[in-house]
Length: 115
Length: 114
Image 1 (cartoon, rainbow over the protein chains, first blue to last red):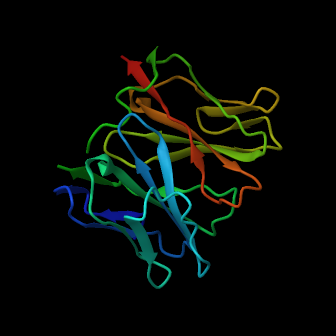
Image 2 (cartoon, rainbow over the protein chains, first blue to last red):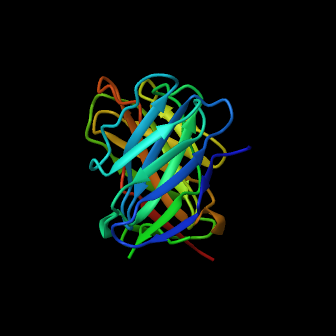
């Protein structure tokens, strides 16, 4: 597609349930990023994928959070046993090569609400 | 989508005036800086970037200034328009940390009064 696509755009879940968030990066982009944006906050880095390299998971807040990227394209962010503090907008971005001076292209995000 | 940044610092300007949004960074090892614009319910959109070997860069109606001495970055928007109303984030890439992802500031809300 022309841009980064995320689904669903909104997700409401009950505390304790698992959720999966999907990201389709821009075709040909080898680097993919997940960020979280809580209300009134900036973007918090979660995880970074670059080609076939091991992902940088240093931003994941707990072991309830995991992500995978299949075939170097689509990525899924999974949150297990969701908590109310997980409520936020989850943003996915991609870049051409993942170099340090590349701009990121963002999707519109998934608004997650944990009741 | 839900609005972001309800408790952010806010800059209010009149339409047609110039806007200046400021950002301080703390890491002297940062070597790449970027400004994003985020409208309600949307993802951040790239505006302009600058590398640390430069102190000024201009785009269409926007200018980014980098002062490495005081670790300060600013975004200037000329002839501000209602469509410029959004939350603006600066972001930096810190060299030598091993992390390729950008680190974002907390954002500034720009409100353009007609």
